[in-house]
Length: 174
Ligand code: IMP
Ligand code: MG
Image (cartoon, rainbow, N blue to C red; front, top):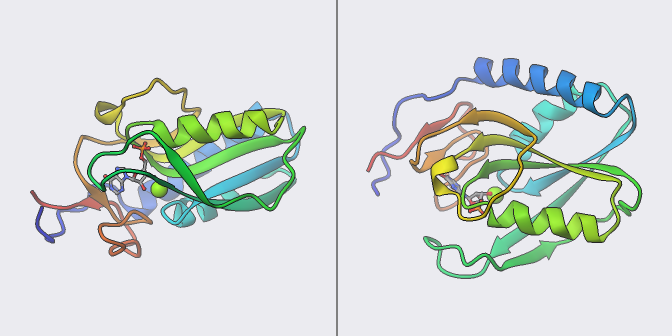
């Protein structure tokens, strides 16, 4: 994979519009109840801010950092928690905010983890979905955009920790 940035796939304006739609949907689905948004570091930070601003509910936020064991190219499905929640989520409505669902291992693990901590409801809100990468079946409640099986960068997503600050979504040329 080269370090050449591809064309713009999804613009800031498209993301803003989608976040507004999803925020409205979340409010409706939770019937006005309070919510805890849990952002998964570091890729979700920009999308997390968009969802926060567009969701008109009583809200608290928290963050987790996770990594999966195994080589960078091949995820093993075993997820390690590098930063745990600071919030007690028992009895709360939780929405996990992620940058991208690829194999599904990370979110599958996190959903089970939150359910084991007795959250009232656990939903998933991802900026991007890459269905061709899926290894484990998982229900994703809110999807910003569906993308092809390419290496995506920008708007929080990195390659070797770079490009997270691009204000749009692009990909790396093969
Ligand atoms: P999953 O467990 O395979 O679903 O992996 C999800 C994580 O892998 C995401 O949170 C990203 O950090 C990373 N990831 C997967 N696909 C891409 C990509 O195309 N670009 C950048 N990061 C990716
Ligand atoms: Mg991530």
